[in-house]
Image (cartoon, rainbow, N blue to C red; front, side):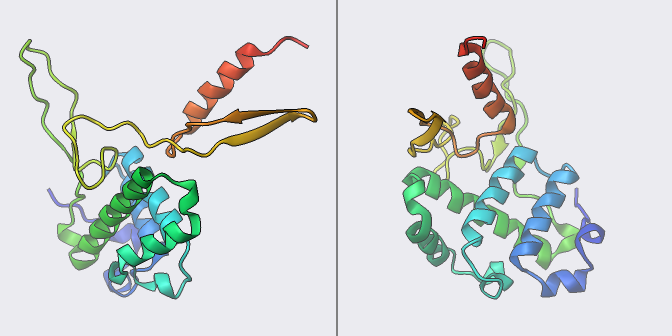
Length: 198
């Protein structure tokens, strides 16, 4: 089945001329909003695109398809690499590559475009139960080599100091790079449960 998503993100002529960072981000939003790709996958790709391509000037980011991605990632690593583990940098590069490849595929053939992430059919287990569907080429698994089992989310090795009083600072470590608002709320609720009523 083909998807024709042209009307919502620009006329074909405009899209063919505009392969900018902004159009890439709009394209990713469209995939999520129309259900053409799982929202967590789009969010992971968009975060990678925003962060890595965010180091570029508008002129440099005018055509993301033609970028030397290795060079851009190297620049990003030089500027902000201290905040990321090697595994997370690899994940970001892989997600950005997938986003740009889909974007390029769309620009070249809007009417025949299909997202690169497709769900596999459920496979029966020996006991007759079915596994949950596994996303093929999922951006939520490993980056260049995809293991048979899902890899844990890359965790930040940054220690976050949080001053809570003038003489007390607490430290938080091991927060995943793709922390969601609901997960942050869970952490906050655990801390609230420790509080002594005023």
